Amino acid sequence: MTRPGGVWRNWARTESVRPQRLEFPPTVAAVQRAVVAAAAQHIPVKAVGAGHSFTGIAVAPGALLELRDLSGLVSVDADRGRVTLLAGTRLHRIPALLAPFGLAMENLGDIDRQSIAGAISTGTHGTGARFGGIAAQVVGATLVTASGELLTVNEDENPELVPAVALGLGALGILVDVTLQCVPAYVLHAVEQPEPLDDVLTMLDDRVAAADHFEFYWFPHTDRAMTKTNTRLPDGAPRHPLSPVGKWIDDTLVGSGLHQVACSTGRAIPALVPTINRVSAKVWGDREFTDASARVFATSRSVRFREMEYALPAANVRPAFEALRTLVDDRGWRIGFPVEVRFAAADDRWMSTAHGRASGYIAVHRYWREDPTEYFEAVEEIMLGFDGRPHWGKMHTLGAETFRERYPRFDDFVALRDRLDPGRLFRNPYLDRVLGG
Image 1 (cartoon, one colour):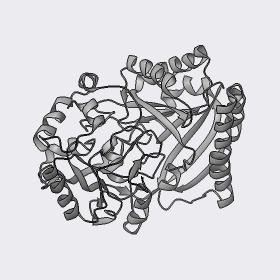
Image 2 (cartoon, helix red, strand yellow):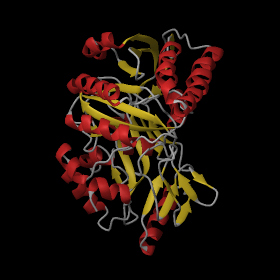
Image 3 (spheres, helix red, strand yellow):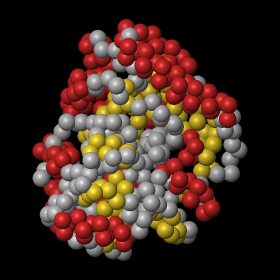
């Protein structure tokens, strides 16, 4: 988000920049003009969405294009269940746009504040061993290249580029629209409950395989896991949503208000963190309800935090988690935020963390006023040892040479970047680090 004085800051307050120029292009033609002008002035240009990446992937020291006005539905192919959306459309607005056509997105993450372009460009994903990330739902896109021209990729035009452009890290051009393959609208039956952590780990593979969507959270210093199991049902299935009061108590009072108090208290008095976590593990997430898919997937996150997440081959999730658990015990840290474990299907997106392999994700967090460096670097070392790939939008320390070893299509992606942006108009320090200059 951009503040008075022209300073842009991301949500987590890990990145900020004062761009040379700030624009709010409302049309595709306006984006093209902005790119041409930046090229003529020899300054880099970047588009930003909602600023929900923890890394500097969207930092724009030159021309910053805020795409919040480039939003809405472009077209619908109801027969094939495909919709084209302008790039700045926020995820939380999409369900209402799809509802008149009886459609829904196949899967979503647990935060829906991002723009569709930002979500796919960073590899945002949800959970479910049979479902890919949001970029895997992309069947077409249009981007403005460094020349200011439009490049369309879909099954009819440049189809070989869809797996690259669908998760392009903002390195190939400015996305102006995205076409998604949707599914018939559906509801989710959600069961959220605390369980013994060791029981969850023992049966982890079976739990993941049996559920449409399964994940769990672990509060360090406890022996409890908070599990979430979502089962897909037809749109006409009976709904039993949370009552407004119950939802407010769970999500606002407990999930936001009390968690904020817990984080602030734990930061001031670290010795209290284990006790706070044990209490949190008892009061969080013991509920059952059925509602529209988007209302179940997404949760409110008002407590600011920093996050690192690694994707691992699914078979490596349990041993990596066990190593993380041992690490926290051995180091004597006091970690107030839960560790999150999710799963996703393999996909063909060149720069996807799930490229070519069924994957599990382990995410660690720290309250934004606490220094995450020691914790994150130690966890990162463990994840790398289990063949991990970091989420592009979450904190990590890796550079291009490491990614070249871990992504089979890395050099193909860089070659496409060379072709579409030979002068590096869309570069920034983060892309220089992860892709090379």
